[in-house]
Length: 81
Image (tube, rainbow, N blue to C red):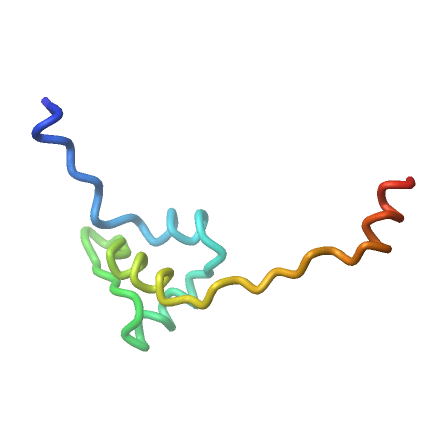
């Protein structure tokens, strides 16, 4: 039974199917990243599991998104409608 001093550990692995449903990543891309050593996959009972620590590292290494504010004219056109 979990307690405040002994919390339930979070899972360290997830099924590849669940990862590709959650993130904008295909199975092929996941295997390519694994082949490049950027994502760790393991097999257990015939299922491919993703090491969530390696997924976290992969996501943390991505560059920040560059977002632009909408142009004022385009914004006012949509407001007027």
